[in-house]
Image (cartoon, rainbow, N blue to C red; front, top):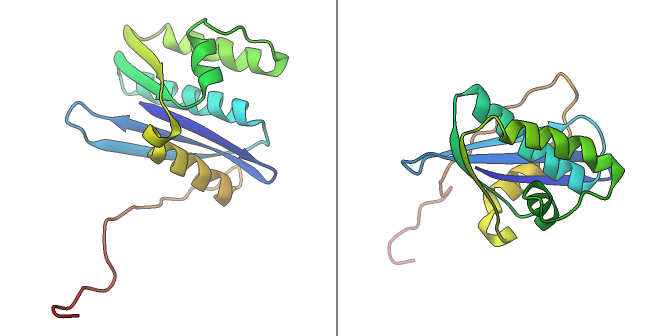
Length: 149
């Protein structure tokens, strides 16, 4: 699972991408209903992904995020100093404890492009609390190249 959060002045979003053992991608984007800091959005993305994994019965998982702060706080390498992050940290640890075999690791942003794009898309769309939108993604070229041109 890859996760990422994005926070702006006018909206926040979370992106979660599950990669199956067969290398199929399952991307999800969430518009967060309250304004928050970027670190809160990162935690929200992690928590949403963990909740989804638990709901569908995943017990073993590799988890990657590009937030060095969040990853290292979850691993216990960094102390959670900001009071507003403590509840997110505690909730994430409770969810992680429900899984059997996990690996949490930091990846550079370049290795987390899809989750980053989903988080930014969700933050940009800033849907209302009860709104839902399905956005399909397709690989396509609109104009076919003509031979000889």
